[in-house]
Image (cartoon, rainbow, N blue to C red; front, top):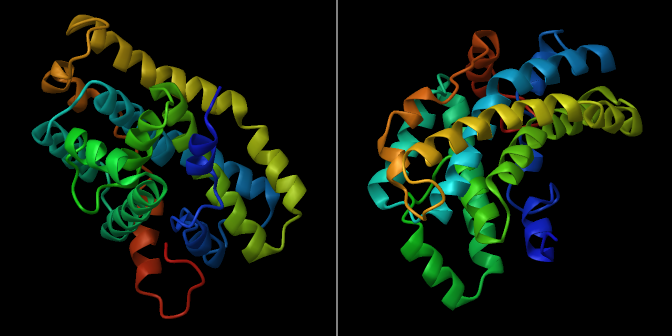
Amino acid sequence: MPSPRLLLFLDSRSPAGAHSHSQGVEVAVGQGLIVDLPTLTDYCRGRLRTAGAVSAAFAATSAQAFLDGADAVQWLAIDTELEARTPSAATRVASRALGKGLRRLLKATASTEEWGEVERAWPLLAAPHQPLVLGAGCAMLGGSPDLAARAAALSVCSAASSAAIRLLGLDPYAAHRMVADLEADITTLCREVTSLLSLYRAEYGGIAKTSVWLESEYLARLCSNSAPAVEILADVHAREEMRLFAS
């Protein structure tokens, strides 16, 4: 069973900063791309297959990397690969801001001894990308790579839904039902990203606790799906003087 601390870590109401990011919804609303629940649903499905797929893949990878004792060089390689898959400068800044907040949350809820062990086992940057912290934190608190992937994919849709409720005044129950209806999409997506992970771990050491699989071509084969229009609009949003959300 998930521990209370793991549930607390994955809670969208945590003070990690996710509530101030809209997953691109604010600028999409401003451009007239999202006007109601059906258009929000289309947006979430598209976001799930692009940024959501990348986020889920790297969250699962980071969870397994933490469990397998990845070193500083391997963590930097994961971070660099995700950076390369995030074309928008504004999105990169937002991802690192969210990662820094999530890292701070982990530190705040851990004892001094626990955090000391984490820092020795998890030599990450001061502000790593959010999926890396999500995956590693999930593993630290007893979660699996599959759970990390599901949490990452779900957060893309739930953040977008929450922002749309505030911006468009949508019925929150209907919006949450829409996210719930994406369960099959999320499950299929996570099965895809974790199957690649399982394949490479089996080829490079099986169930042995080793991170050697990170030195294969595994990272290069992770999905790089992108939505160019959303990436461009993210940079447009960052230059706007009046905005409710940071991204």
